[in-house]
Length: 253
Image (cartoon, rainbow, N blue to C red; front, top):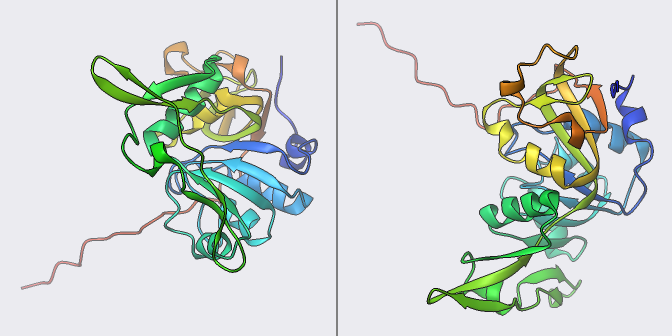
């Protein structure tokens, strides 16, 4: 089955307002920026997004955030986005902060059909006890707080129950995809993209390179095409370096 569509707009055209999205990427690596841009242009709003982070102020999910299109974020790291902090503290954005490994496993479990699991991460903290601010009121009080989590003991150690995550749609970026949806990811882009892809009921992939079936070595496939519904070409110019670090120039002697 050929899953390649002509445009990002066609790929995201049926994502409704209020949809739950699992969005791949790790920092600014592997962000599905082409599909996000199409969502910005489409005007889709009220989105409930699950992603490791929320881009930066002027790129990635930060574009949807700045336009007021995201109502809720489930994330691990949000420290690179000033607009995110402003909306959260002003009560404009609901935020569920989740330990990074727990977030990854919640997505993996959702894709595997496992409804919940026990983990030691967060034991003895507010993650266990509840009370973490999910949404603030305009006056700075807590309007919505996290609930306490169920705790059980296994082998003399306490564990928290965490529920799996599934999404209406997943948006991911691959280095290479074939027309059947088989995908390969490069380096750190593999951290969250495959997990988000399997957790989505409908999965959209943007790929830097689209090849014919059979061109991808089966041993090189990180995400089988059975999980992928639509493939589009990524904008090759739409890339960012999160922190450009260079060595000082050597001085001649």
